[in-house]
Image (cartoon, rainbow over all chains, first blue to last red; front, top):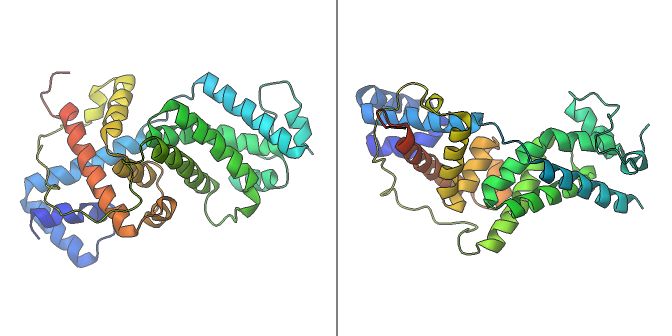
Length: 79
Length: 214
């Protein structure tokens, strides 16, 4: 497996969707190639950072409009 | 037993407490299905921030994001009886909200979002920026600054890639659920996700590379 193959398989590797033989080949490549190892680790970190990011607080005016609209529309639906 | 009218007629902007325990989503959904509007409002309150983040991430337009969120909750209420419970309620809600957001995105930028695409060649995939980030690169930034960085880099991403990344990596839908939500093939989801991840890594590299003056 060369560097291009690693990049091509990167997502499946991160998601644990590679078959055992390809996973082993890819891991062997990472032991020898510091550039690919860097890309794999930084891509994992990128996903982790976005995944862990807290949703911003819902602005109160947006929340109020949402609940007012839901109340109005659900009321119409029950009439 | 609360009736919808009890909830709807209350002038109090604060939620009525549903009789159902907050912790149990299944019970809340079952109660909402049987007309307990307070239970539905509990579900709305539980997920409104995350759904707004989703619709903002897809549309990148506050007005569209707000409309998409409202319509997603309304549609989820009116279609609640069709929810079979074979996935989490939140996952089902995400798919509805993603569709609402996508409709608005396509309307606003009809040429920037394709239903499907041939998988591009791999010539543009090889990473160019290869600098060490050091440990915990995100901790070098204040929380608000980090939020702005993440918001900026995701906004820069093409809508096709951004949408797949949001559904797969932030909302944690499966590849199949993402493909079905977007009406694209599984290979297209995988191709877009790989490109999105690589592009985001490269964009974050500009902020995280060691020695960069903040």
